[in-house]
Amino acid sequence: MDLRTPTAPPPSPTTGHDDDDAHALLRLDAQLCFPLYAASNLVTRAYRPLLEPLGLTYPQYIALLALWEGGALSVRALGERLLLDSGTLSPLLSRLEQRGLVSRAPHPGDRRQVVVRPTAAGWALRAQAAGVPQALLCRVFGGRPPESDDERAALLALRGQLQQLVVALQRAVDPVDPLPPPEPTA
Image 1 (spheres, rainbow, N blue to C red):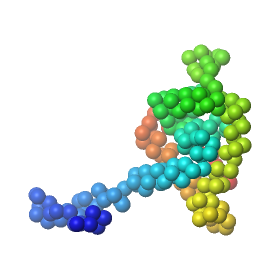
Image 2: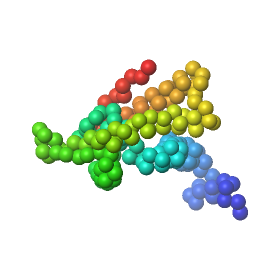
Image 3: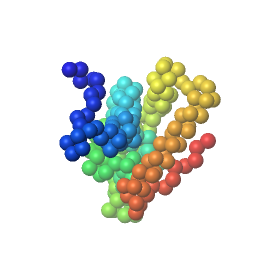
């Protein structure tokens, strides 16, 4: 039996015939979650060879992106920005701190908060990472960056749609404290 070839489901034990309509939404290709999961997995894999020379994993890279953008952030604000819980963020920051790329210190105004910021080595890594976004786009577009206005517009539109989806999903998961809407992009 070829496991790659889909087979028809068995007849329903209650009706004696196929319940295709009742189970149509249970098909993998009908799920919103699966293409998002697959795309996330593939994006992480596409970044891997670009980040390995920098000694970074994808989660470490996005943490540094947020810190390079914000300079210094509380651990809580960084977790909210990245949508990571403290159980995931703390070991990630520990590894970055062990490598000398970030430092953590109590907030001067509120000792209960911890502030994380890039070190000099962390800022130096930013210059080395500057080519990563363009290199990823080249991988996606078959060895070349997006060249036409249509390709660039499609990427911007997709990013905007994904940002809107993240906000909508965040509201569904945490309706009390939703993310602010994404900044408009030109």
